[in-house]
Length: 247
Image (tube, rainbow, N blue to C red):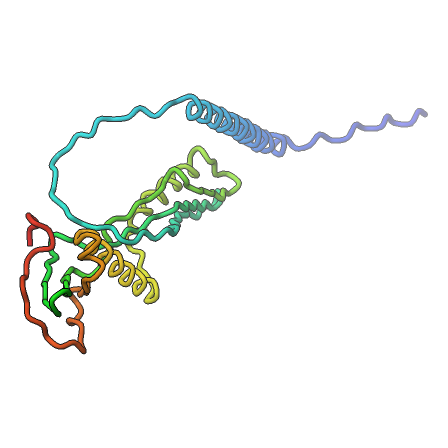
């Protein structure tokens, strides 16, 4: 009697085959989307680089709202750097953007509020006491053309989207970060003494070579007392430092 024929293996249950197809389709779609987005990002980078290389800067005519009188004298310029950062946390990966730019802090005093007292010390010598506001920061300049930027991206975060967005957020905060910078006590003292020295040199320049060489010039800031240890001398005049300056 012939042996019974071997039975073919039982097919896998249809429910498992049907459950695998959606998963495979989803993975395929995700892979295609990642490739498409990566290609689009590369094209945007190439186009932006070509546009930046070929575009020239067109000067704009200033639309002046108003012109203000000023006699502020910049005496010290300090060069430093400011850094601003922005970040975001997500299941698609974290993003951290950091921007650093050079900064110039300009310090000086307002000569429009300064006045001079002239005292006679003898037949040939005079003392010029200049009362001026204490040095302060007059301007803050951000050199954005020398920016250094860095972006750290997660596995599903893209430079053209999340990266550029958070770089923009970091750039927005640069001005506030620079305005909030303070000086150490040593740097503040140096700014004060440099301002005093430059004001004295300016006064001697205005007096001329002969009078400036023999005159005694004293700079007194608004938060200081007059120089001590000197006998009071007859006062000749007290006036603004510059004709036409507004007190």
